[in-house]
Length: 98
Image (cartoon, rainbow, N blue to C red; front, top):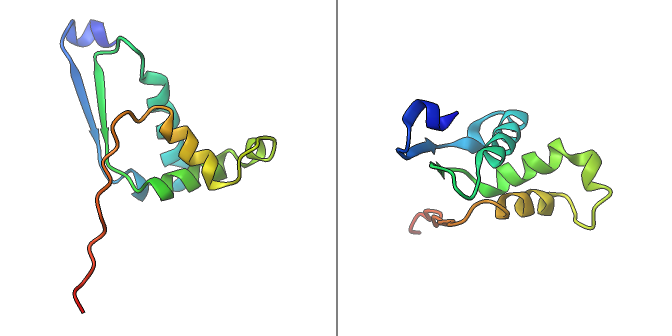
């Protein structure tokens, strides 16, 4: 589908504040992005998100499955994200000076 629209060009998709979406929608979007990623893809994603919030949302959305796995709650979400995010950048929190 991408090739029919852009040919051999690359496509860059930037998604920011993913964690501000409603929990089920953010989890669905993460699953859709996961399906769009392939080894020879010309589509590159840059995601801005709070990993903890998205991980919790993925765990909540898949709570029926999580019970059967050897992983607990939010760890399911972290493992899901770790499988396809290749280059994470962790931005430190800002702390006010006392």
